[in-house]
Length: 491
Image 1 (cartoon, rainbow, N blue to C red):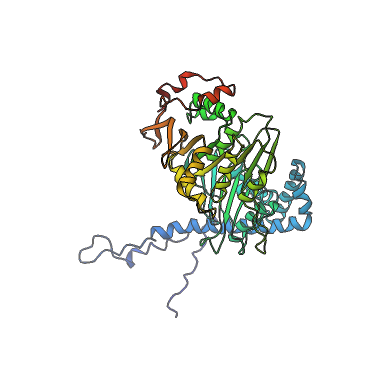
Image 2 (image 1 turned 60 degrees about the vertical axis):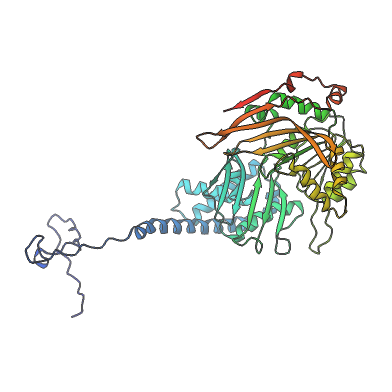
């Protein structure tokens, strides 16, 4: 006889019902000692599975279900590609066409797995539509207007920024190849590529959102992509005032400065809102002027009728044909511009920009990365040195002081609020030092219980030296703008 024997099944009950299965843990009373019998130890308690094992079971079921849904999605997508001309569909993606394709997908879902419920079929159909006509898992995030940034750290980790705070989402890509395919769909229409030869790329979406992607071998944990959103409803000056990001008096003052043709430099850190501020300042440029914009990835949305938009070009597969901001800036000077707007100066083109501002192209604007308005001088010095010309520091500062009239600083404060934290006039030179004075600034008073910075936007009481130039341009100047007082209290 073997070590284990199978017990015979109990006879059926008279009522025909099947007897209950015996409880394996319940042995006959004669086979186990009674609790509390003297001299006999109690039976050992049955070991319960560790919590991790119990938790792993539903997780494993979820993973298996997810894997099955991914297999179904791939299978249905392959069948859809076999049935339809996807190239033509991508070109003619009207709502009517999308609805027709949706019905085909739903039929394929029913054919592939009849056990799918209504919700699962609809979700599969939407995901396949997003893959076919859009950017796959990103479509749901791009449709959310509250999201300002999408940060992808490999295929299984996607963060978004809402209201100045980062949140981890449940959006995932199937694998690295899936994420690489989405990156290729973004950059290919722009004539750019992202591969082992060129593993970094800047691009833009149809709505103007800025995209940066970097892939292995430079990105160790898988492809990484950052999307800075520029939605269908861009931020306006009314939004700045409503969110207490600036004061109405400052907006009117900046409008007068742009009309008068002052050269303006916008400074700030990453994500501080420099490009948005540049876009809004550009809205004050008169409609009868010719504007040339120069950017790495075109994202400015000027509303004037006479705008020429220029965009840089990366090198081709042979490493040739690269066109830089500096090349475009030099060419723009031959295009008879009234104003030149450069999205961002980050290298040797800074010297060309200063020279353009100094040679008749008044009212030009650009942005740079700097921690404060006073740090902007050192940043410009460093970038001018990158141009390859060995200029004395004093000569660079003289170029800066004569070219730049106004510096506007944008900042992202603790807790997420973005504000115009300083408006500074460049007065000139005293010896070897560029002299500046703040006209308006934000004074932070603290951080509230929600971790959000609060404070006051104040007028310093300083009257700018170029006030006569503003008046001569036809601007109406309110003397109260320059009276030392609180303009906005953000609590």
